[in-house]
Image (cartoon, rainbow, N blue to C red; front, side, top):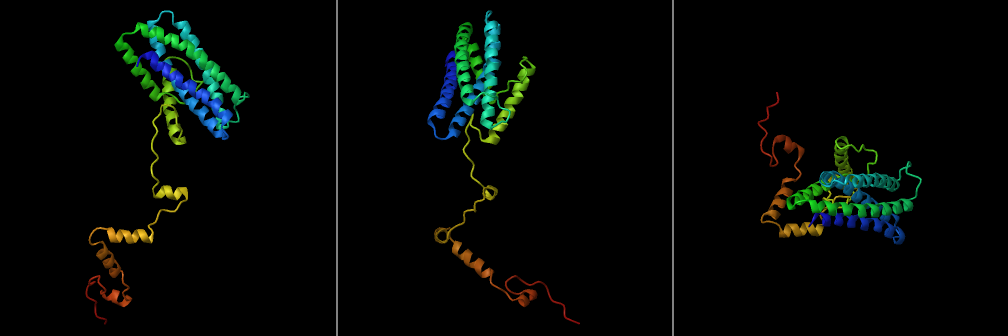
Length: 266
């Protein structure tokens, strides 16, 4: 896969997710489906913007002499997109300080900004790929994939945009976003989906469900199909639990062995 194909695939995923927010809002009877689609789009676009800004744009500045104005315009579009994504996230979370624009208006702005961003970035990446050797392309592809794995999954429009401080803060923000995704059981685009772990004793207790107990049929089946000696062990256990008179226990009889000689009374 070439560099342009990889970036185009990331653009296609973001475009499909943005379209899905309109489709779910118009056709689904459950409003939560539209919110989930919008949340997934927010995570995918946030990760993509971080990855291209930290891996693709620095190389383009060094290798393409006329790329600085184009990259500056792309970064300005990215900041505006991040502000729109922040507003969508506030609507999803029910934030009382969310923007005055409706969710539909924010989705339309996001679709327009995403279309402009894709058109400009595809041209930049195509020009950059022509200037790179095969080894440089391979290293840049690996750098982009590493950035996608550690990228923030939430918009951070108020983080400083300097090369050193902004990059470090965004790395920390990405780590914190991944912690929040795990705590919220949030599925981010491109993230690893873990299989749910079975509930243990504490899990059953917290869920308010009774622990599964074996039925009499299951117990009889276990005894009949168990290992040799299981029935005799059960019988021995029952015999060992026979009631023994309290006086006999004090005297050390009843199958528990002697407790020592009793001193004679004076």
